[in-house]
Amino acid sequence: MRLLIVAGLLLATSHVALAQFPEEVRPGTRVRVWVPEPARQDQQPDHRQLLRGTVESVDGGVLRLVVPGTAGELSIPRASVRRLDVSHGVSPAASMIQRAVGGAIGAAILFGILNDPNRSGGPHYGTDWHAAGVGAAWGAGIGGALGLIFPFEQWRRVIH
Image (cartoon, rainbow, N blue to C red; front, side):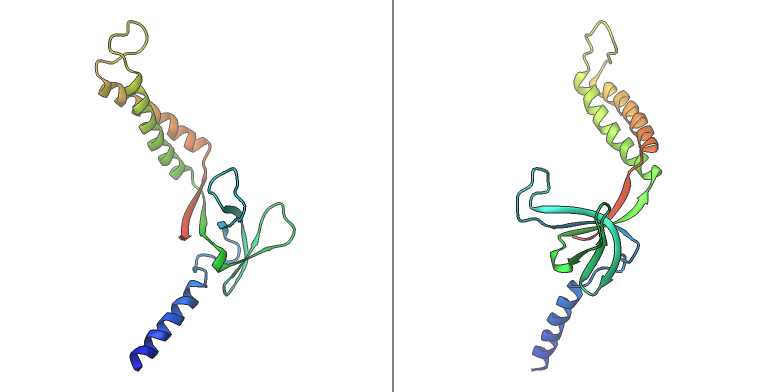
């Protein structure tokens, strides 16, 4: 009998815990929230609406969000949230690293595919691996520079 009572309490407590927002979601925090959308949209993700805004308040299982360009606040129940990300601001260093890695991979593949050792004019390399290495260096340099010049906002997922 005790086991049944303890199991019932644990089950009830887990539902209450799921209805709450994480500690990181507090007033003044910039968040990105996905909520259900009954109608199909042209852009991905299907059947979800993406909202970006600043947390006005968190009352139990309800998130009150101020969305730029709207009047007032938007109340979103926790049960409706499909995903929630918290902003960690704009980081030029993180943007530089992410874009350098992406640029290196993309340019290495491109240079490796486009390499023709028998070409008489223009850049050509003895092996595709050598071409990929040169492409990776160029891609990392250009991608890293773009990351420093045009940094983007860094997000961390707190609700899956």
